[in-house]
Image 1 (tube, rainbow, N blue to C red):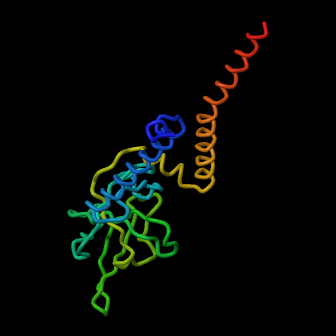
Image 2: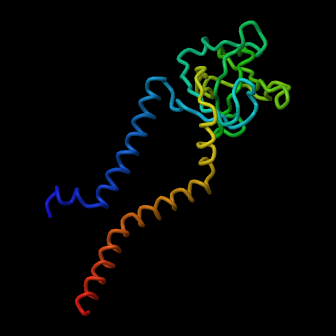
Image 3: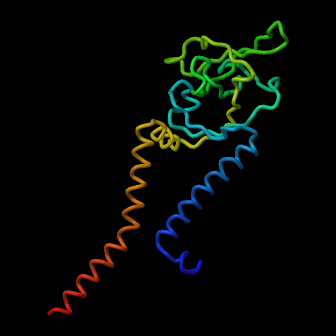
Length: 197
């Protein structure tokens, strides 16, 4: 079988289409990360802690921070509020937190740490109990958000939903691939029946 004939087959076209979508998403993600200088250029806000500036389910754009001295600190009501930064939670490094930098503390070794706090007075009345070092910081909120779109990412963030979604895709691909074969067999059976009538 020659290459043009192989490429015309339904299952090959399906695989090519899926691969093209995956490659496009990866190119977009890594390209955006390169431009914004961060490994996490887009993030879904996972809690109400930053309301009313950011709501749970908002999809936000993040830029990397080249110089930690560039981080503005201050409470949300200050004349110049602090930057909203994204950082690894010290008690669970896999979790990313989106909070405002409210204070910069000079350490004896010449480095800085930051105190942070969420803007929501109902859920975050006090500063966070931890100090954030330079290595914990992922980036700064760029003041670009898409409301509600992050809910999709949050929905797919649980392991069970990921497994169910992958299983569903496998079932869909199998059905799409087997449907033409089943139709051909069914049609062939009808043709054979009509010969005996």
